[in-house]
Length: 620
Image (tube, rainbow, N blue to C red; front, side, top):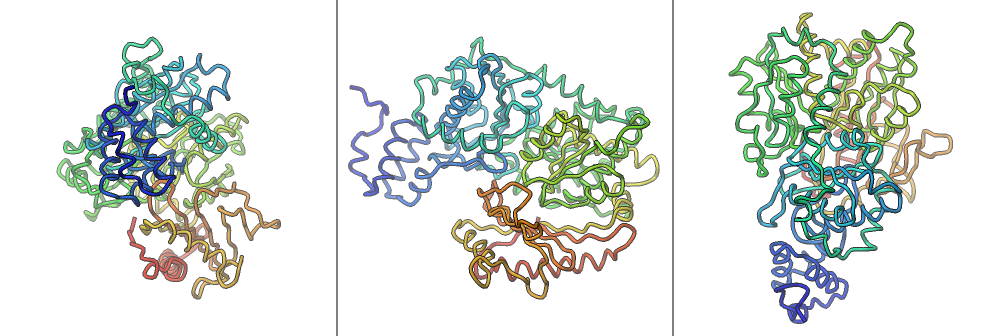
């Protein structure tokens, strides 16, 4: 009988048995199921060389859904992104959808992808998308498979527009080049939350062996079940962009120039088109970065959130071209960074919180101008994640609209926005501090394409009245109170150390006792999203949902500072977020900045103990 593993040496497992039954079983399953020669060879080589620790890390645990879906390094193993794990996850998706939705085979799924790839694993986002589609087509499910790479927000937009059952985007967004991911959207156009994520993974465990046709990516070619939505969705998306365009005639006349970098990702053509919709001349592209490059060759990391150090090429081009504004979309074009040239000759790179203050002000300003007399401001909402600046809350308190916060991650924002819309509410804007913005509700996720062109229009309007973005930001803070925020992170690659840090905070001086002080700073309240504890509530229970998949503790200090420590849902980071707020028309900005720095220093020294725990600091 022919070996089902093809040319795999059937004696290899016997010769190289690890003595660990669980690991031996996992190795056997991998070599039996994986038909990608390069990833199968990676496991064979590790086995041959006796690399049991790495084999366990790769084979004895599975990925779980974080704040942005599944995300991991490309390569062999059940804990990585590769052909086999994508096939297994899609099989689990199919089983769960089949049980949850009666009309799955009528509605189908949307599948999109970015431009990531890894030669050593024969792994690319496009190939993974085709395998995803093949699994679904093999079960008679129609698939709207984009014929070329698209921005991540096109997938949730297409799910809503096409009334699909769900959507899948193959992307790792702004992560390092070695990573890839699998992002899932439910039928409402928002990312999945619990229980969907857990149930999908249960279904993966139920049926981990690839089905007969799951590896047959040729099923996708010529199948009547495959439709390319690219033209239709692009047209509809660009048309719907007009809903957040308020000054097209002004845009057509502006002398302002804009530079755009797509960070070697998918954004170039789509941002060019969006600017045309708004009446602008297309932004000047950074030639070295406008075309897709999975190696992200010109940047140390493909994350525009890192600031001026990764925006070097775009800033120098802007100076050469006489452009005052740079807009930078990340590789999958769902996030946006903005830099503005000041009269002093320095560049101001806005933080996520600062740009959100500007966009929140702008979206409400435009709503006020266009709304009919008697419109109920009490039905208007803005949202942000709990680790983001509270500036929208301050604007809402003064202007009369409503504000809500959610757990970190746009999956929480998107689902909450959909609930509010279903109740007849108007949601103008939502954001997360990590440069993710939702202007309007055409897409129930962050969208760097629409945010880029909305920023351009805001800058154009302000320029027409003699104000730049930084000047307007100061006016916002003077009106609603200075909100001085700082976000940064420490790298930590050992989960045991991360667990120890947070367990120490939960048992600070005695069991089940949180700290009363952080250095000299008294703590007024503590909220622990991981355990559901909130000392500010009468019943001591958090209003925000419990999220046991990651650590997140927020400290409200007696001096008014609010600081959060949390683990990243996508990277080996412990992040901190801290903010000091002044009252409208009051508050010494310099004092707030100095006091914030002192609290952060105490927080890091007393709670994170970087020297003792071997943490590597990085300023965001």
